[in-house]
Length: 268
Image 1 (spheres, rainbow, N blue to C red):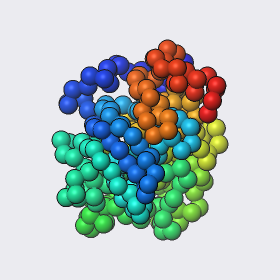
Image 2 (image 1 turned 90 degrees about the horizontal axis):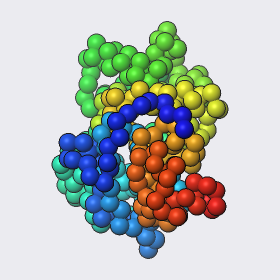
Image 3 (image 1 turned 180 degrees about the vertical axis):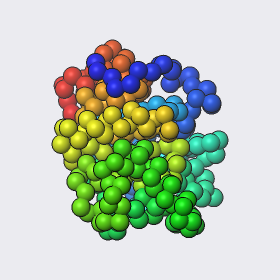
Image 4 (image 1 turned 120 degrees about the vertical axis):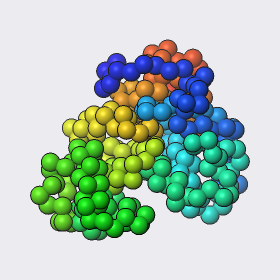
């Protein structure tokens, strides 16, 4: 199995607090009367890539969205259980959600640049935080675009509309926008499903480098992608976490029959 980046494997069933970026404890989530996530418990390791796989509607995106409270935007959403980040339960009613979404960035399936310049897209979140100094903004924009492997392609047209960029460039711009806030965790929900194979590979290589800076959680329907880029993989089915271990083990020697059936194409 081709891996983009070699790593030391950790035992995710026994991670220490120092090795843990996010800890989920007995998480249940409902949209109205629909019980979408059921009794999820897991620890996600720092500075690794963790992939969530499973059939459409199994709860992957809902679980990822719970990590920065995006599900709160949907009427009728309620949850029980805890999600710990930096030792605090982000499900607590007093959690500062704006601060949380700075720490936990999100990139969606389709590129969604704002209708403004490339520069203003990347600096948008910093300006919301009150950053006004031009030198500080310039440095942050350059750094984020370099981290997203986009700087060399756009450095001479920073003040042109982001809409001029290709789909792959727009997705990297959105990643840069999230990175400008220096998140601890970056969530990627099907980030390459709308891109061509060559651009997909470029984004995958980018992810392999970015995990040095932050923890990455990716939702993907593409099991080959999960096997290529992720250090750990979690398989979800009907709102439950079925199996979660290092990706090499899950894709070659799954413990649960449900997992084996899914990755071998017997269902899903």
